[in-house]
Image 1: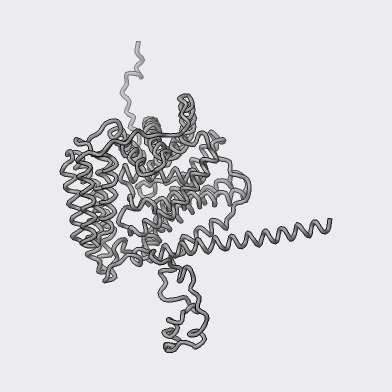
Image 2: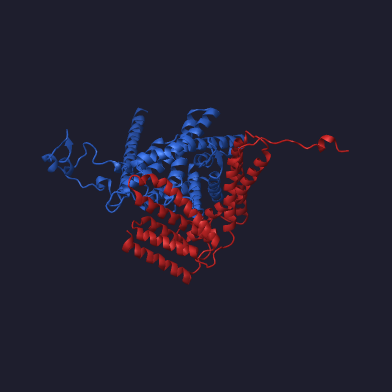
Amino acid sequence: MTPAWLLRNEAYTPPSDSDAFLDRSVRSFLGVLSLIRSRTGYTRERRGLDARVKLVSTFVLILFTSLAQRPLFVGLCGTVLLVSLSLCAAEVIVEVLKACFAAGAFTAVILLPSAFWGNTAGVLVVTVKVLICVGVARLLPATTEWRAVTRGLGSFRVPDIFVLVLDLTLRYIAILGALSLDMLYALRLRSVGRNHSKTRSLSGIAGTLFLKSRVVAEATYAAMECRCFSGTYRGGQPQALGVADAFVLSADAALIVVFALIGA
Amino acid sequence: MHIPDNYLSPATCAVMGAVMVPVWTVAVRKVTKEVERARVPLLGIGAALSFLVMMFNVPVPGGTTAHAVGGTLLAIVLGPWSACISVSIALLVQALLFGDGGILAFGANCFNMAFVLPFLGYFIYRFISQRVKGQAGEYVAVVAGSHVGINIAALAAAIEFGLQPVLAHNAAGLPLYCPYPLSVSIPAMLIPHLAVAGVVEAGFTAAIVAFIRRVSPGMIREAPSGKIRWIYAVIVVMICLSPLGLLAAGTAWGEWGPEEIASVANSGKALGYVPAGMQNGLKLNALLQDYSVKGLPDIVGYIISAVAGAAILVILFRIFSLIGKSGRDRARGGTA
């Protein structure tokens, strides 16, 4: 027979506790993991621009936007960003615009006091430049498979070892990030009511991450040895550039010419 | 502390990138030498750790949260050179794939967070832990190293911001990039870092080091034997700060050239003439006249002059010490 105390309803209401830092940590890790999972493995772009061309174009646009002093040229760079955005999927557009306006708003707030010293035009120009550069920088990873970006770097005389380390970094961010997330969930689930040692447990999670990283490093090195991988990394043969790539590169060249004529 | 693009001028970004190139070169050589076989996974994992450490939000008074950078922590666990590479790669991933921190400002961000922070934090940690023995001494060293490290990194960022109105302005004198002078940028960066970010960094670093010491003490990298050559760290800091001289208006007192001395004012009156001894004195066309290199920005000229000057002094001192040593050896041989 079931004892009566077992059937009685509990009236226990755990006292509320501050979980904001745990929530934010979980959100940060979830954001990064979902980004890595969505950007590694398949390509979101409809038309295949070469990653190397995208890297060059990104750098050119950011550099010349930054160098430009005349609002006309800054406006031209903004137009190039808008045209590039208009060719993207809706979710990419939303993602890039969100980042643009967040960075632009932050910059405007930071620079606003200098407007009282007579720097009104400067506040506007720098804010627009930040908006454009953040948009361009966000457009690259949003439309390119991340390993293609890291391999694209290999074409610019970046040492192969560096490219391999970048690839490994992304992989380990995903692996160790998932582990951290599990531990954060565990800490949350085990904290019923007030838990005064939650902050201390956070350092335990980070410490465990360090310990786990040693295990993962040893396992990876053993796996490399088993596969006769000496650490020398060779990327595949670079693909030939297409018509679209040539068009984008000539647009970059045209931008530089226009800068030379009107930008400085 | 991640500086976005357009807060610093492209010329400043280029100089900061140029400063980091030899640092990365030495770091790769050192790490390759220290951990030859297992270097590849170690570097990748270090970078991933550096990236993830920045994602832990720590509660701070007032109900908000802050995150640590972990530069000193990585330097203590992996060594300063490995920490330099790890934080640099983490910053590259953040700039290139997450849009956090500028692409042009990558060199400046690396200088502040991958060079100044881990190296200074680690040197302070070692300096104190070598002198104050015991567990308490080690924790004091960790807290001091991480707190000073992040604050000096913030100071470096503040100086970079504060130099912009001087280095990049239009014909009307209005700034083209960060508009705030050093008098604004330094307190704006240092006050929150001294009060909040530094405390978070120190607390987080000490807590993790304590955890690792308790659970797996062998993971903390043993510091190489031998005393720290502090003088090198001081020289590097002085070289980096040398362009601050550009902020000064006019020439240092007593260092006037013949073309300047006529306008030097004394008790409100200009001198009005050039002394004959100066007018017809010896003229020497130095290689780095006025600490500048023709065709390069002044800031680059200052840094090149500082590097060359420091290198010449080090060479001279080494030669003198060699002469002194051989003299002592001869004297010892004579008495034997």
